[in-house]
Structures are given as C-alpha cells and as structure tokens.
Length: 241
Length: 259
Ligand SMILES: Nc1ncnc2c1ncn2[C@@H]1O[C@H](COP(=O)(O)OP(=O)(O)O)[C@@H](O)[C@H]1O
Ligand SMILES: [Mg+2]
Image (cartoon, each protein chain N blue to C red):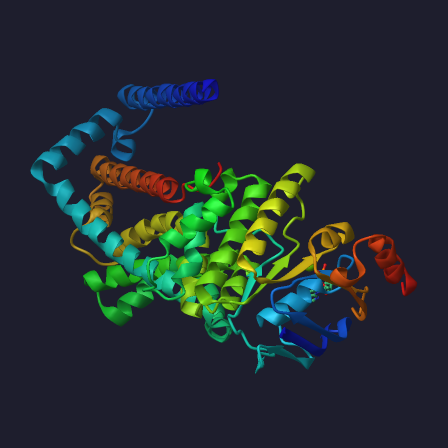
C-alpha cells in the first residue's frame, strides 16, 4: 500500500533548478532510500515533504491527504545538521518535542524507553558539548522517534544520519537503528550519498541525478537482490553525467 | 587540576600587583599634597577623603544620596531591560516592525544619550520620573539591539525543525530564540548599566536636591573637593561591584558553555 506519493515535484532556488518533475511513491512499512551525490537536492525534497519548503509545482499526497506546501506535522524528520539545544541536557533535549502541547501527558517513560533503546541512559544529564558525534546523532534520532511516536507520525525521514561518523560508531548506530525500526515496523525515508550504505539496509532505492535531480530508475532490492547492485547503480548514475 | 592552581596563582599575582600600584599611587598623592606640590583645595588627599567618607556615612547623608541615585538607576534599568528585550524579540518575530522602527532605535543608540537629558527635562519635569525616563532612554536602545542581534544567532535549521513539528512562533521564541540570545542580552546589560549610572548622574546635575549627582555638583560649587571625590569614588565603586555581579550571574546562568 502506498502511504506517500510525490507527484511531479519541481523546485528552483532563483535560477538554480534543483528538482525537476520528481515522481515516486513510498510504500507503507518499507525502508526507502534516496541516494545521490552531494548537492543534488536530497535535503530539499525532505524539506518539501516536511512542509518547510514550498515546491514550485507538483503535489505531495500523504495517506490520501494533499499536504503540498503545508506543515502536516505527520512526518518525523531527523535533519542532516546536528542540532540540539546547547543549554539543555540529553533528557531535556528529548523532552522538547513533547512540549508542543504545553500540558501534554506525562511522556517521561517514553523518553526513557528510547534512551534505553539508543544506549543514551548513561548520558541523560550530559550537555551536547560533552557528547561525541555518535551520541549527538543518537540523541537527534531519539528525538525524531519520540516525536513520531507521540504524534503518530507514520513516516520518518532520516537525512544522512550516519554522516561524519567513524566506521565503528557508524556500525554501532546502524545496528541499533535497524533493530529499532524492524521492531516498530515504521516507514522510513532514508537519505544518503553512500550507495553501499543504502544497499545494506534498504528495501528500495531511488537514485537522484545531479541537478536538476531527476529519477531514472528505482531499484527494488527484494526483487533483484543485492548481488552486483552497487556496480549497476554506479553505472546508472554515470550514464547521464 | 594543576591548571586550576596556576590559574588561581596568576589571579593572586595580578591582584597583588594592582594593590601595590594602588598603595603607591595613594601614597604619592598624599605625599604631594602634604609637601605642597599639589594644592589641597583642588586635589584633596586620600586621608581626608577617607575621613569625610566615614563622616558622611555616620551622619547617614551618604546613604541618603546613594539610595536616591540607585533607586533611579535600578527602576530605569529594569524597565529598560524588559522593554528592550521585549522589543528585540518582537522585532525579530515581526520583521516588518523591525524594518519600520529599528532605524529609530539605532539612531537613538548612536546619539550621545546624555544630550537628550535637557530635552527630556522640558518634556516631563524634574521629578523622579524624569530621572527614570532618562535612564530608560540610555538602556532601552542597547537592550533592543542586543536582543535583536542575539536572536539572529538562532540556528535557522532548528527553527525549521520546530516549525515542521508544529511549534508556534511564540513557542519558538520562548524555547529557542530567547535562550540563545542570553549571551547578547547579558552583554547588553553590562554595557547599559554603565550608561544608566552616567545618565542618572547627569540628570541629577540638571535638576535635583539629593542624590550622588547632586552631592558632586553641590560640592564642586562650594569648592569642597573632598566631598566631591567621596561622591565620585563611591558611585564608581558601586558600579564596578554591580557589573561584577552581573558577570557572576551570567556565568551562573549560562553554564552550558564549554569554556
Ligand atoms: N534555501 C536555499 N537557497 C538557495 N539554494 C539552496 C537552498 N537550499 C539548497 N540550495 C541549493 O540546492 C542544491 C541542493 O541542496 P540540497 O538539497 O541540500 O542537496 P543535498 O542534500 O542533496 O546535498 C544545492 O546546490 C544547494 O546549494
Ligand atoms: Mg543534504
């Protein structure tokens, strides 16, 4: 079942054409990856989905509702930049997303649950400047998951969640993330510039080509398997550059 | 650990250097007056100043002047701070308002603020209200500009993230913009406290029957240099102490800084 439809989305910044008539659909419960070189417009499409950016043309349909240019609040979003509030410790940073409604129900147990799942309990009282890169990503990820749980957001967007991490840290975080997502059966839109990273965790992969981003092909890993896929994708990418 | 100790040692060293220079300076002053190189009528001398200070303290006269001046300073300071922070946030929140009104605030900030005192006196009379208004004029523009600039440092991506989570503009200001501009706000408070004291004294020069500014002005007219200097020193000392207090408060509140 399709949960999210991206129809003919185009976007330019002044004269810079970034997205050109993008069309793709995301199925419920799948791990969907967007892969493309730096600067091809991956973050831009996520911002459009979140409603922060308005597309020049096209439509976004989420569960039959037209959310084009609207902030639906129904998509969890882990931004590419590591942004935590420097004056709040880990727990209070997570608490932030529960404060949209000032008199929200007690959410402390939910926050604890996700701190446990992401190995953050020992860092509860740490301020962002005291955290290593990996734990900043973990906090940022936990924030998105908690938000999505509270609001019942069915789609979670992760913008390069493993970037700027060393190999070991990346591996640990990836393991934990996969475990959580498999358990919870969420729909994921995962953005990365790393093809092999995408191949290792995705159900389907869409390739964006550099500006303006267009889609040539969507690779379904459940149909075609992972064998030799990286070369195929690389070739597909190079064809048009 | 050892770094902390050397830091402390350095501080002690700096302090003792300062104290030595102070004692030397005061002794030289005292000696020059006693031996007739400086005229006591124009320069007074440290021992007389201390003596006069104790006299004024005992009679309650000093406390009386000080209370009046500090009252003007503090009431004006707090009104200026809160109004300035409010305006700074409002301008950041509603950019159109900033475009219309900020230039006036900037103009007010760059005028030599004491020049406005006589005009203000014409407008609002010579009472307590006049002095408070003067202080507000000195404080408000700095606080508005500092808050407005401070909120510029807000991470745009963070604001976008919160918007995507349906936080209201007001919540974003309260939870992100205000806390991230605290550093600028404290700097503004330190800068404007000095201005607040200056303008209160100037306003008292203009028209008053009590206050440190009055004490200084009156003593000058009667050639009582000793009393005049008691006034100058006591208000300087208190300003320095309060600014120190503000710095300590800032360190206490902004404790998430790695430094
Ligand atoms: N707000 C903006 N204004 C102008 N140009 C932008 C803006 N956001 C992104 N861009 C440009 O659009 C292109 C795509 O950016 P982005 O979506 O961040 O790429 P990616 O996430 O794939 O690395 C880049 O060339 C970037 O410089
Ligand atoms: Mg990006």
